[in-house]
Length: 142
Length: 142
DNA sequence: GATAAAGTTTACGTAAACGTAAAGTAAATT
DNA sequence: AATTTACTTTACGTTTACGTAAACTTTATC
Image (cartoon, rainbow over all chains, first blue to last red; front, side, top):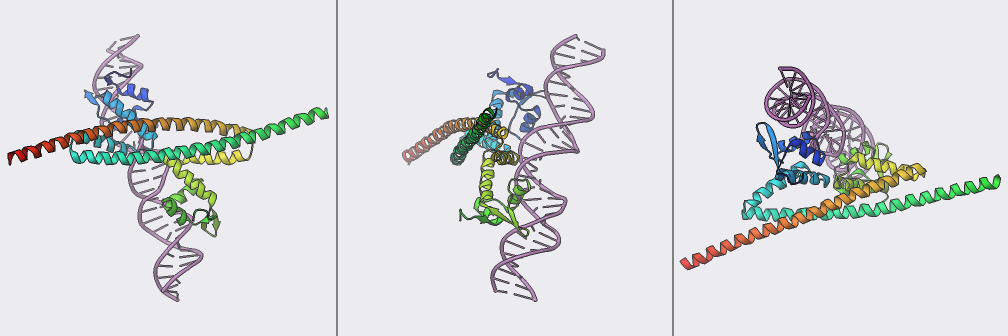
């Protein structure tokens, strides 16, 4: 199911858990370029890969416009012009810097979640102590 | 400059490179709660920390609403109710899963960038070869 | 051959996250 | 006192990324 060569719109939508509306929108914005049989869209495995990249981009905070820029640039790059190649290398560098920033953000977030979790567990332990004390005093009183 | 105890709106805006409009918007949405001297906002270092968290959240793809949820929940958690504490632990777990996903995404992206860069460099090397051949043939022709 | 199922276009609606302009206040400077 | 500077509120405008409804075609099924 993952290595077919063509896909319908609802197949893709289901696989990646997006609406067909979204898929059509991505085509509208020039991110996907499905073939047509009559009016019906026929998606290639290249389209499928691109959809995967679009969604990952979104999870990483990229706008559709940014992702499209990358797609277009990569297509141009494949044409083999030297200027394009150099520009692509530049952009790759920039993205790497961005990824570094994101990794830092994640590391920070993890540390803070560690301390947050620790505090929660401490607070819970406190509550447990109180409960046990109550039980004890109830027993003594009975 | 980073450990003052109060800040003006423009100080914060400058430090974090956002517009004052954004800062006011964050207050409007309940993410910041600056004190007032007359009408003028006076931000505490707690507000400053929260602003930092807001912006990091954005870089990580969190909406303002999501970040606000976390803030509110954390405030409630501090009140020490057991139910809140457990809910917070749940949410922390969920976030950790999200962070794992993001780390995977980043790792994937890095791998793909590696191969992309490699292809670029290969293509450039090809172009260099062609150039040298041309030079050689020019020399021979001269 | 009717009807459902999946696809299509067109187009208006919406939530999020601000931008931007208008019009006013308050404090500091010249 | 006049003006600049920083701040304020109010409010309409804008972009992104779709949701949603209407009206229609094509294909599969009973």
